[in-house]
Length: 305
Image: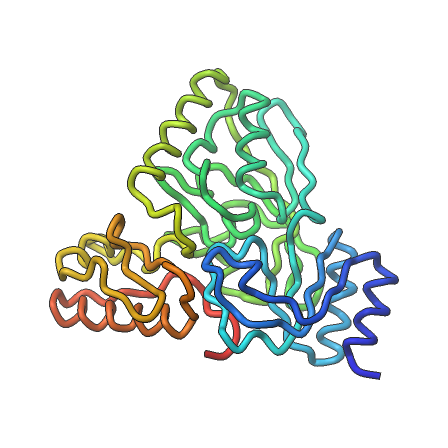
């Protein structure tokens, strides 16, 4: 009996949906990627731990995925199991007047809407970020002067020994687009507590719409992408350096440096992961040659290129 058969049996036992030969392009915002062997939608920390015990016991490669908003998935797909932390793990509730509990699969959109509904301010910066709460904490996502480091209170995660641990903000090593979780790939965030302040719903809504308007005005939201393609180099901005080098509109296959925002590589239609990475490589080499700055790719690569 193949591991897929045993995986299906386990998923039936722990009440998690399991599908085989799933297109990664449908689960990443770049809309590229081949098939994964299997995809499992987890429903709780307990089911996740049981699933991980199985994976490790069978030596099956796995990758934890939220909304796939910071991923470049290989055209060859992924020869392993995708663990989907999505709608089935998206519980959210108020636990105090100014604190929100949410599971890792909660979308940032739902988290911001919940904060607005309860007249809590502090998450306006995140409105429009196309990811999950778990993914946002994993990379300390931020925009417009705010980041997860400003609002996170504590979290639970599963460690490399498959034990459920609690961690406070001060121990998360939150820096620019980095955290203790991104430094330790075996750590899997399961839920968290967000600390906000009471505010006025009108002002919160106005600020959210203002920032969303800025995103729409400046970013190529009408094309698939993974957001900012490169991390901000110390002392400058990737988009500024790319524009200074005259690289707006440069393309490889269906991948293009956006003419609207040079910090974005977009999928103009029919792009492959190879197109995207080849273009990113060209941009990186050109910028380093012309300016001396070394750009670092921000999205993670899933699978073998």
